[in-house]
Length: 178
Image (cartoon, rainbow, N blue to C red; front, top):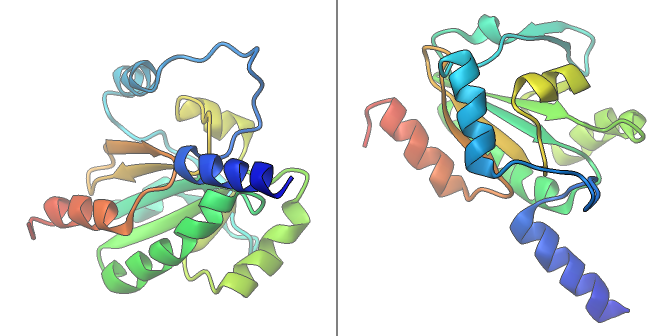
């Protein structure tokens, strides 16, 4: 039983969490991203979502900044593992970069605010909706992160846990600090 748990933990850490079933038909990641970008001319879909502190958050509020839009949930081990990196990115690049965590907790929505406090999350967390997930081309596994440049264009999509260095390399290129 212990070995089974360790195997699940390793696989979910490398691949990401998913609540989907094997019966669902899924496009490949490249198809999904390609369709998303073709439909939006690389523009990140606008949204207005409610933050955990009750404020309305619009993507357009962050025009002129790089945005990391991170779809996650409190119950997802790889999401939990990536949060400290996102906290550090927000601290290090706060003037130029905004991290927005999109909580996909539905059954565990009441756990989001205590989770934020426990982990010391220093970036905005909003409650995701099925419509938002659809507008971003679907989210087959979490964490899924979108990197959006200062012009509001999606420049990268990551499915699964992303090393901090990959985000910082992308940010530095977008800031012309490479």
